[in-house]
Image (cartoon, rainbow, N blue to C red; front, side):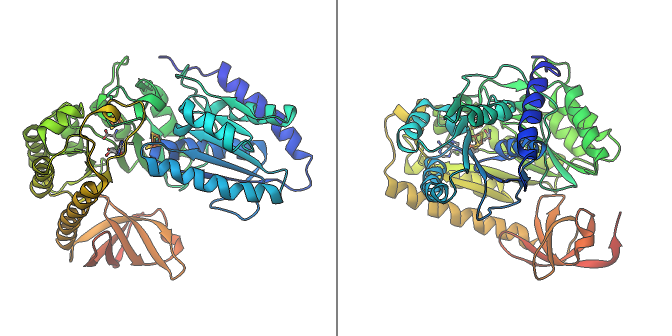
Length: 469
Ligand code: SAM
Ligand code: SF4
Ligand code: F3S
């Protein structure tokens, strides 16, 4: 699919200007905030929403503020608790709206792609002003403008994506690091997962558009790039560049010093990608490789496309190529039909693969997915007991791996500074490191000696004379 650089973005810009003209008449700029649920796809979309709000003349808050004039909830529906988070917030914001009648409430993101959700919001939360989905965020200024003009609720949900619209304005969270979508949607249809239904079919961006975006970000001070896709290893369909080749091309850009990506898929990662990671110094030695479950039968029912043995063999190949690599993963317990023996397979994989970290989830039944109607839904108490055992195993190994880092010197890019002057940032292998320093070091690689390993982060101290520009 070719990116459209003129028509749609021109419409967006037209409505940004119209809104900016309205807002300029106000004595003070209205305040807006964007609350993001879910994964890094939503995180990146929220940067674009912030960019559009800023271009319209809103003062965009970094976090939550007490009296906003506009609030956007960018929603997630991957698990039921993500959805409940929104409903809880909507109740709170009803009160806030009562105290500020001009306040606009906007909902967007994955949850809005489900008819049942939009119907519920219209019935029970009809004070929401604007609703749109994942395929038309570039229409946000137009939809907001319509809401101001008509003074009625505006709902615009598209079933699938039309074009990839390039060049939307955007505000990054960090000046020195940027996320870049390399593809949208997902075609894998893992039987538990709602994402293919709410994010649409897999579409890879043309490599030149990706590289142009990164060059622009580098000119703006970015040194670290995170390439985003639900399955980056299948990048490139319809183009003549595959994911491994894209990594090489990004690494050729002068000014980029670190390249990360997420997520990889065990069925699609190939030696060419593994060797590109190994050979390119700029590619961080961290791989997020969700495996979900250890039992080959469960993996088949999940439609994951690999077996327990195949996954362990893959881990072996990756570690042979890059002995120091940190591999993290996603694991789920309680998939329909899962038995105690199946769960033992998951623990077995955890013990043998020795992940540096893992996101662990209770299976959540998602309406419309194949697994939702499968027999053998696992009782909540069984799921919870497995979850606790899994967490214990995962955390023990994570801590053991962290302990191996005590005494090492890691290069860390500080990202945040706390009130007490403690910096935190990420090492090449994605370890989170806390150390004393000052705000001048934010975004600058420094050498840090690890003094103490906690389970989820490391304490360290800057090595004298090792701050590097
Ligand atoms: N595309 C990535 C992949 O396949 O590895 C995963 C993206 S998904 C947004 C993030 C994680 O959410 C998945 O790896 C899975 O562990 C979890 N997840 C997805 N659907 C779920 C469900 N119905 N219940 C519980 N966890 C779920
Ligand atoms: Fe969901 Fe599977 Fe696609 Fe990941 S690969 S987003 S788990 S369907
Ligand atoms: Fe991400 Fe949640 Fe959507 S995990 S793709 S924001 S359903």
